[in-house]
Length: 104
Image 1 (cartoon, one colour):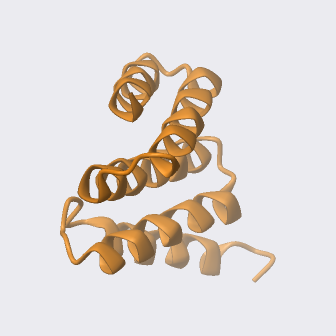
Image 2 (cartoon, helix red, strand yellow):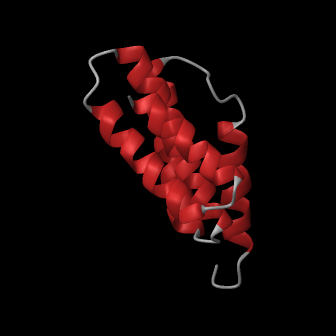
């Protein structure tokens, strides 16, 4: 079931329905958190957290985006897998954007 929410979120993200995508990714996190299939749960969590970060990034809510990307990176590291090889590079890129903002 978590995969269904993740896939629906991806479709909505592709359609630029950021609120709808956000809702689906949060539902995927909720469903995955209750799953007993460890690897499947971890993969859905990593992808959902990453996509929640993408949604926040597109909304220029950089602190929230960074929060989600860090969660995705931590979960991926904890799992010992590498589903999203660019995750660390994207987090670093976002940190550089945040550091370059006038308030920093």
